[in-house]
Image (cartoon, rainbow, N blue to C red; front, side, top):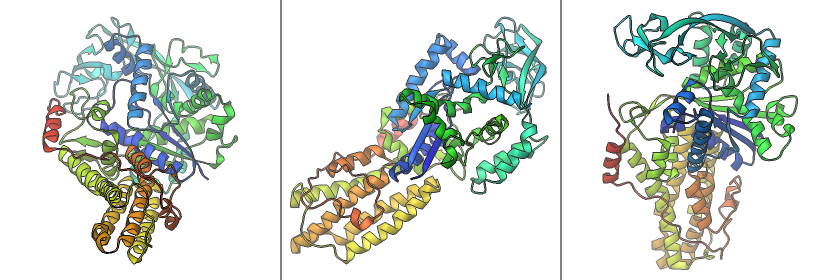
Length: 572
């Protein structure tokens, strides 16, 4: 039994995420967690909400709530939606937790002890009316290059020129609209990542099996332009983890908090500690997953994320861990994803364009979305959601291939032989050939799942469903029953056992439908079919079974047209 640690990039707290966010991290991580549990491995699957930074404060202000109250409420909302999509986290934590406060301050102290923190005095825009320093993107004004009137302090979206807030003409605060802005001096802490460049590069180079997308992004940040830069790890904000050097005050840093991108990845560790707390376990229970001197040397650690998060997870978070000088577990495999686009454009929260996670669940059960998203995961390139493709995939793959097989086998069996597994006949050459073909395909499916080849694994699973249908078409028990009812019983016995095996194999992708299939077979034996000939005889003659509710319904053209209009948002 292997020990598998899995973390999904933690979603930001300010609002409900869209389907592109889901397929870029949490959903494939859940697929991998479910598969490894099904194979009998010990799995720790961790996620959390990312709750600090200016966007959380602004979202709370917009909602008219104190930021702590807003974050607590949105954490509950996101946790509920995660349950709706059957995301099987062992713990869904919060980056604002006391555990993360202590650990983040601990890491900062260790980095300082190692000589990897420097203080930098810099000038930043201060809004007099807001009573705060403004991050670059919260200053807007007229672009000096193209005269676009809504350029941000870091970049003009119109001409794409990189900017500093001081470059803008007539700058204003995006928080209040105030133009009472001043340049003021402020002091911040920087993590000296450049001092760790050699260690980071050697570590990345050792990961020969990582996806090209992951390593190419990491190498770009290491080598392009001036190469890896030191990074600010503090901010002038009210909401966040107070800057402390371990458990001691940090002179000159009073009133400041750690930058959200410093504390957020540390929450992976902290959330595992939260899991231990929630289950009444001691610190050793979580340390065995994260400290190589306390049991984590035999853990294999997998991370899942969208490509925009790769630099922080291949450079900044590893720099924190390596720089601490302590024996923390580093990631072994980082699975990154490209973007999922929406119907000819991009998902847009601000424009209400695309399908968001709560809306998706209000239309159809989670299995429909899980299947489409995973079978179209944006692995080698960006992918695109279209309603036509979604309708076709649901109707053909789920309803016609899998759902139809389960329905016609159980209905025919009940009508001809009653609601128990029939006892007659013996498996013949066709059944033996199916078992051999199925066994080979299951081994290929296992290989693809272990390699996290998500789209290819989905295609292989669909092919496994297809060969069951092909067997039924060729064997034609509904015809054979007229001349050789004993042989027809053997065919149906095989087909009923096939449904149970399909339930086990399909569970990582479509857990609800798999549970329905297993329950209909009157079984709760989820043993992985390593011994397929035995698995195809697991339901013994006389075992009661039932005709399940229709596993999947088809999407009508009228529904598809309605949804296309409803989720179009405002195109620009």
